[in-house]
Length: 635
Image (cartoon, rainbow, N blue to C red; front, side, top):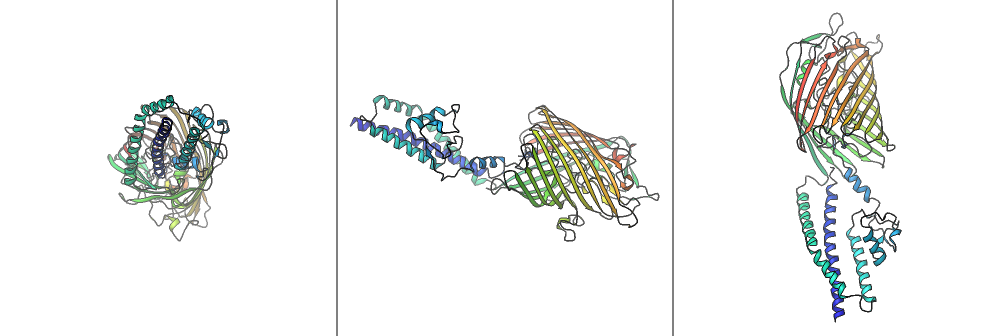
């Protein structure tokens, strides 16, 4: 009777311990499954930097390089607007999937008799001795057919049940095979002492699991969507600008041009400084993932900004020099809510990813830089990206990326214009049956990125663009880079179209954790096709330069200070074709200082200061000074 009682007590004790372990494992597995479900909602930016909305980049390669956020950088010199909100990355989903994708739940496991048979287990593992005892002493732990144990992977309920059953059968065989049932009073006392010693911990774990289950249930009941995550940014701007004297500008207004009797561009004088303004800009991103590796992105945007610096510009230079990127109206009318981006990204292999859609943001995919994404880095239109790229900002088409190796990444894209802030028609050729995808405004881009380390990125980019004239003029800036301003046939006559070839070099280098350098150089050649049959084609060649230094974590972790110098548009030849923007041969240059200072995870203050020398490319124009302070809310 004593032996039977002892045997029963042993069994009950062992079963009790295993049952508590099963309860804990079930709870943990429930939480892990809930977390896995939650991660199907993409989680960046901002780079991507969007950081509060993540430096999203694509899921392949070093797409965007904004301090650990694969933001996807967006710049651009919009005729009336341009901004970007990078995607939140879904790398956590990719990692979860890649860790488990080779595991089939029906895959049989094979018994092992020595822990050395498991090729992914080493004596340095923290649970090595426990695993060795279960394998070699009790023989109730199995491995996978490929001789792996996969100790870092979460256990499934089926696998736990199989392991529990094997250990129980081993205990019963040990009891049955021993003449005296293999049980001593010391064994019973040891088991009882262990049960009592860990009773509080087991109860605590059970309570914690119950609490986690309740919290997960609440989260699931109140989540926005099981597949879609909503993120956003709101920017409050306070902006001012003043000049040291009267400013000379070409054009009758920032949007109208004319030539005088001597075939010279008509000029005007700006004698008064503009008033200080307050404005807002809002981004809302809906990022949907169906498989954990794809992204369907819908971005809504609204704003009412018009920077005071725009009062000083020549025609065709609206929203360029000294204009903060967030101080804009991203639609034809202020306060209109519009769709800015709409596209679908998906992998076709481990190294190749495609993006297709009717409204793809060119700057989300190309010309990225660790220190120039407006969410944390340099903050004006001219400093956010190459001023000679691109002919369009958003377009319909396809983008493909190939991660050739760990160091090299190739991107290729074809887009036809579908820009939200331009009136359609005459713009928006992708949706215009008279123009379509191939006969209107379009661009072909290829970019090679070399990343020898996670601190250094070098990008070589070529862009071929085609542009139709508007009212006989070729409009520059974001409507027609690489020209800044407006061009005609050189005699006041009309143009048919223009084609351009642009080459760009872009780098960022985090020299040390607290110091980095960055820069760009661009060269663009634009061919102008006159309507007059007796006139030959014209050509305007220009270059652009940017150099800067950055100070990550200056004053606080997550902060970023940048100092930047840029020449946005230096005319090398063909000035006679520019009815606006060419000036008198001077070269406009700009200094910028921006400091991103996070107050919390969701709120940052960003003061910025800009100095513009030789405004509008007039060497005798006085300096212009622009100041901006923005409050940046992210969620």
